Image (cartoon, rainbow, N blue to C red; front, side, top):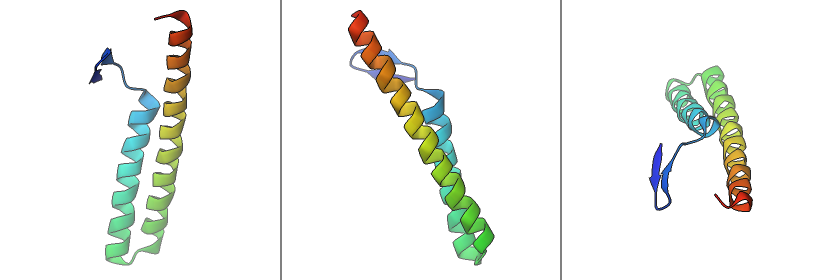
Length: 74
């Protein structure tokens, strides 16, 4: 949930989960680099990319919903 000038906005689940996957993926990648574990680095890159894609889907969904709300006048 985010407070905005227009009121309270319920964050999109895809954006939240995507951001979490990006964070965990980046951490895995960093730990993999620190330990010299190429598999862990790759897992981190993959998870981070998956999170970015999921966040983008959430952002697009919010944009479409916002456009529909504006058309309806809400």
